[in-house]
Image (spheres, rainbow, N blue to C red):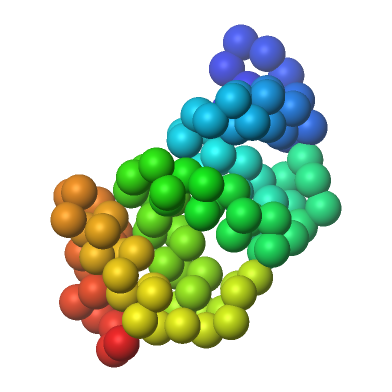
Length: 108
């Protein structure tokens, strides 16, 4: 967020990638966010899905939730509401409030 230094999305991507490639699930999730929103990189849902999947496979609740969202709306993947439900439910079971609300408000 730039506390103490000038905010640089490109620098953030550089450090997230270094950690993500070493298997850090939070860095993988954050790199997915950067790709989804086009911050410091060219916007790419396909790349966002790749990094969300890496985080989700390690049980990262936000990675699971965001990957599920991508499956629900077909962002970077084909729509697959069963997979969306599975992933968002995994996140909800870990206490993720957004996921709990999403499950309550959407049809699968």
